[in-house]
Amino acid sequence: MYKKLLVLSLAGLWFTALFAVAQDTHMPENAENSFFRTIRANQHDSYITLGGGLGNREPLIFEAFIAPYFLLRTSDNSRWGATLSPAILLRMYAEESFPVRTPSYMPQVTFYRQLDDEQGRAWQYVFLSLVHHSNGQDDRFFMEDGTLNTLSGDFSTNYLELGIFFNKKLVPFSHTAEYFKTSLEYHLDFYRSRELKGHYSFVRWNNSIRVFRSLGSLRSWKMQKNPRLQTTLQTSWLFGDMGDASFFDTRERFNISFTIAYRPRALSDVSVFLNAYSGKDYYNMHFQQRLSVVRVGFQAYAFR
Image (cartoon, rainbow, N blue to C red; front, side):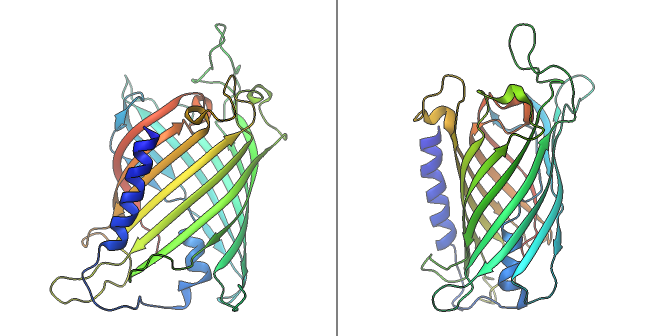
């Protein structure tokens, strides 16, 4: 499925770039359109799905990612910045009593530093994230039959993510803002569930591209102030020992996600999204399961 998803993702990014109806060639600018605007574009959007979607996953009422963040800065023109977020991921299962089992708690802090290119333009940004990921459980990791205890097994890991991202305009069309990110994720041997060794990837290479598109009005031919169409392509390659997976086992080591979100005119803070994902399950003790799902839902709109 990941090959089809990659083709679909590239087509979606191209569609986003082409989707225009106005003739003005300048996007609105303000003081927030540079460093801190880019920081907001680098955040993980909060969302809630409608059901579990189509694919090989247990029936769900919803999956929700709740990630409010607090932006810390000393001044509007500061080259340094930081964000704090008490992120939580949870799933409500379509079973008797509608249980919400072992949510993922992922509090994190991220530091940012703005860089200049050779022409003195600030298009490059370095970031460092410190993230904790656990499920708040303390029961045994494995069941008696050797399978993972996905109901109450103790899952805990802490990792650093170091990377760089750009907001250089590359798509040769107007009214778009493109953000590219690449990073290396390293899980520390610090208060980490020891049973993860040999089964869970401790080193990951993450990449993403996000394209925000401002749309115009068919009546007035004027551009909307804020982007209404967003396309995101994310990939990850998982290194290290993962059971019997070979180094080039793309089925076990390659994750890909494609999301297209549209903010209707009637909604100022919410987008409707369609997401396709193929890769390892990201829900704590379910990490050995391979997911191939398509789902729809609502996404928080934080890009201004």
